[in-house]
Image 1 (cartoon, helix red, strand yellow):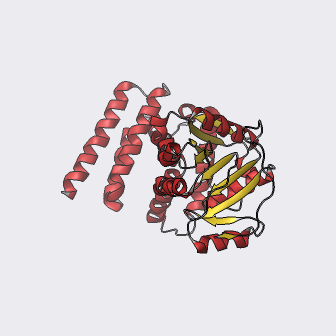
Image 2 (cartoon, one colour; image 1 turned 180 degrees about the horizontal axis):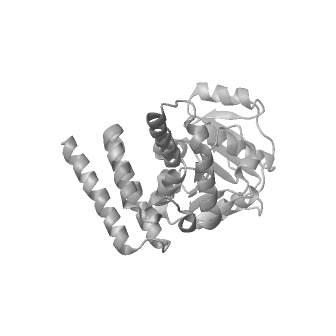
Image 3 (cartoon, helix red, strand yellow; image 1 turned 30 degrees about the vertical axis):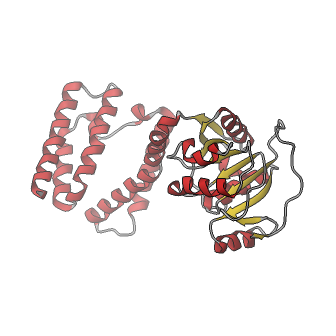
Length: 314
């Protein structure tokens, strides 16, 4: 089953330049990657969707594009095929692609941040050169090549897949960083902490702000400039030099008051606060501005209050 028109022309396999690609998946990253590569002059041969509804949707969005169904329509030979699906679906989709007749010697890159190239093992068994290509950025699906410019892309996989991944990153004006396969999940944890977890932290701060001030509208306006300046400073001079606040000053009394307030008004956040303070203490020590003796005292206070909160729950 296909929708749309057949793209014309095929570059010779093994050519120096990457000219053609296919995309398996229709989510936000798939659409943005598709747009970016087309804007850079590459030809997309097909987009494969998981359902007919998704296929119709992408065909309506890109009426000149050939669209197929994963597992039903074979993927044509191209310079590279991207598997752009959810983390948990990568191996399942790879199995379907292998069963539907993936061309031999095809380079296949998935875009999962947490999985290494072994998630594509069914395709590797079928003769494909497999790897991963994870853009370290958020996407809505409406972006093109500008969203990729200057970002980092985590890559790993076979020698052939890595060569292709680095070439693609160069085409997108991004920076490719090779990740050891056994540390891919650690790499992704770092990305999630810098992105999604930072959003969760800001939302938590806004919740505390509203509890403290009864101001349900101004939390982001009040805390936003502080957040943006802190992040800017950390990126400009490094976390150690940018760190300010009670921990780096050694203000144990302030930490105690924070913990008392949290236990009274938001006791569910005590473990989170304790974990963040613990890492902040280590950061302050690395900066050379917090003595070991003071750091131990601070960690003792945090541990004591955390134990007390846990005992109260029991």
